[in-house]
Length: 262
Image 1: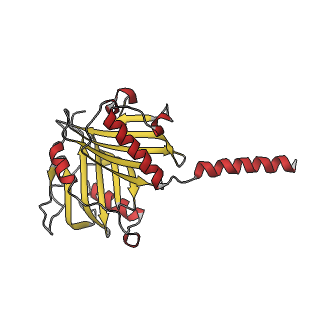
Image 2: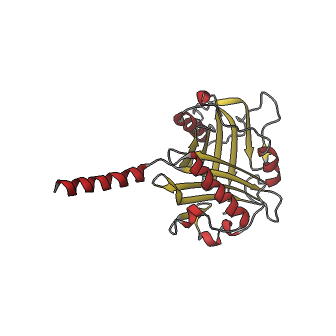
Image 3: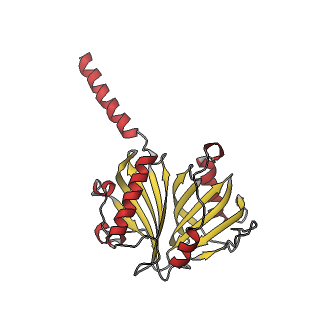
């Protein structure tokens, strides 16, 4: 009886350890890289996705079949950057296709099973093109590719909580002008193809922020190594992504995508 009980405990313990193991940064990098390669090839198939036949997949917050979504279109990828959330086992990837037949700027959050980056459980994409807010893929490519987003030295990294709070404060400001945003100087905002930066040390992101708009249903991917948080949310009534780079507790870069075409 004791032997049987011990055997059962060991089995359960091994399963629990496996299920709760945190995913690694290298595994998340591999998954994100496979996603970029799949999009370039126009094949809605890569290892982590193939392992999840029942993956929850959406584009612009609407459920669509993976096989007929944007992944089925081969795109020339002119720029891409990913961030890796080892705590939540999630990734965010920004893609710019400016020189192909149909320009797109795409943001994709992927979440993985039980701390295992070999299996996607949820995949959401913001897909913007002509007609969406300030869309200009050529401008996005120009500005995004010139920004420096290096890994932050370990002794200078902000905490997950501080990075998330900085992004939330910015988002809260749209409906609460008393929100205390940790504005950095300089700070550049890339909004569609519009850029607030002019290469000046006094460049600011605190310009053109509307009032009375609720930014709700927020989903986060946070990368302390990159000092970055991406937030998927409903901006008033439209699908939206805001990505923030935080340096020394202050906002340094903001990238936005807002879907206007439905």
